[in-house]
Image (cartoon, rainbow, N blue to C red; front, side, top):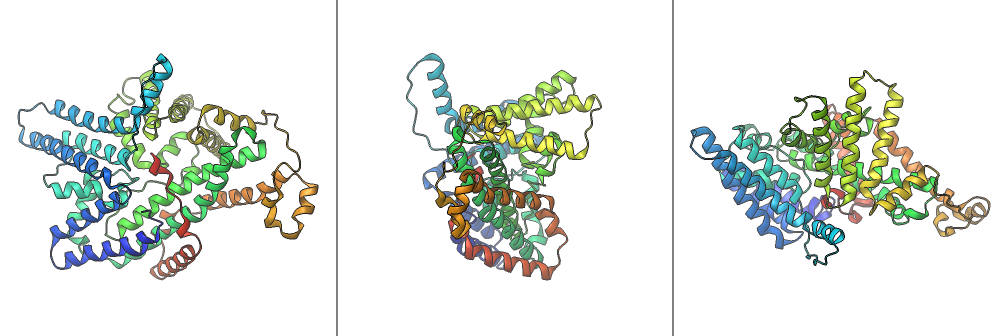
Length: 489
């Protein structure tokens, strides 16, 4: 069940909303939480019920360890707290490692040693990367005495709350559960409902209208990476750059909007990252909660910037190398993470030397670096990635015949298609819709983002925009939406 499916929009979400506040109105506060937990577990198991026991086992183990850490901190009990924390982290990483990386490890062992170990048929459980990191953060916070939870129902709701369960944002316990406990959030709030619907609808539009449109061109380009010329290669890379942005940004908007219906404000996960003027600023704006996790639970524990420049550079590189590996079991993600780690080190050195750039040049350098590195993120192997980059730089020597592509792809030109195809290269003309959409995407990025729009909008405009957006999107394309990209990570 996707956020963009009619089953979610017209059945699951309204029923969940009405049931939750009905139970609260009856003063069945525990029942209302049980209702949300049940709905969230149904939402999770709708994909594949066979993995429901996995998340329940993960919940139970992390709750037990986290509760022990909290009690030992508050009551100064004589237990080896550090050992308990290590056991908890190893348990989480063990689950993640088995399901996400075991076949990758076996494959590389076979490659290096020439052995022939058989690969297991392991299907990656939905959301395991996100609920694993969220629970590791909870264990570390409990160890530090920064949070505590002695109620299993509350803890289960914290992990499984459906708007953020599948692909984040990665939330802290104190961020979300204090809102569920607040008496001010026990009744439906008209403004939150209207803003929630509008934010959800903006996200839906980003996904089904923009991201899914770019997906067609990006998929076609990466599938024929070795045959692209410069124009098609740039169109392919930019199509994926915008597909990924609007896909994940759209998901985050929809998650924030859905949670707001229940008076829960999830942390902002995107803040116009393609407006960044340097790579450090990009990571302050892109997938903000993942960047926060990497900073607080990897970079700082490694020593951060407290042990001199060389250690700082090592810590930055290792942090983003781990961030790359977190995204998937592939050397392409390792390369992508390493490139961003190197870029952050170079940026830190540049700043320490007093380096500066005009804003336009700084934006061009940052955006093009991000665009190029997304190629490694998307390509199936290194050869495909390098083929696209060579084509972008005009180094692949690809020669196209004027009729190298079928003229059916020019149907949008109407009766003049054949005449135009006879006079101009077909491959170049077929790029026109792509580059037109890319131009529109750049314009959209230059405007105010969804956060800025919803913060200052009046009630009447909220209602009008929500109705207009919702009707237009649902009638046209919502039923054909594809799976969100970050579901794969």
